[in-house]
Length: 142
Image (cartoon, rainbow, N blue to C red; front, side):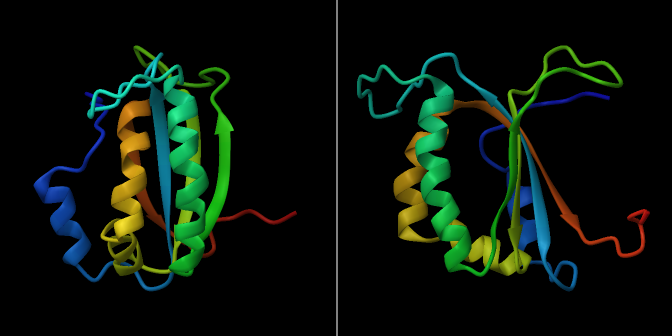
């Protein structure tokens, strides 16, 4: 299995937002890899680490998630690989909930999102982003 971190979706992935998607909320699972030092495309000087720059983005994106009816669900640092093999671990896992695929697309098109994305791009070396939907009945109950 080949794994390729990216910072922005390709054309095919963006086109997927136009498809109806699952009924009910979607949960975006983000595997994040940070740059050692933030690198801003506008050339600004910064003493921030990549993670610190991404956190500036994350604080604001949490507010936008709520504005579109979603919210941040989970965020934690990756400590170790428990199963399988990869060349390099991601640094953090984050899960965000959106009420629909369309709500996520709307958020991506907001002026504020474009404004704060500079911190995301400065901080991220790359990421994997999985769209998931509620698979009712798959949770085991005690």
